[in-house]
Amino acid sequence: MKGSIVSLQAPQSINDIRTAIRELSARAQLARKEGRNADAAELDHRIAHYREELSARP
Image (cartoon, rainbow, N blue to C red; front, side):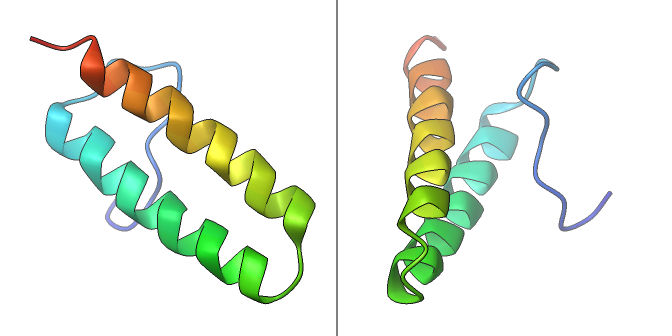
C-alpha cells in the first residue's frame, strides 16, 4: 500500500510512524492554508497520537 497513511490500530514500525507524521503534517499545513481549521485540528490530533506512540518506543 505505497503512499497510504498507516492505521492507528495496527502495530507500526518506527519508519511507518515517522512517514505518517510527515504526511499528516503536510496535510494539516495545507488545510490551514485553505482555511479548513477543523480539518487541521483533527490532523494535529492524529499527529500528536503518532508522536506519543513514537516516544513510547525504545
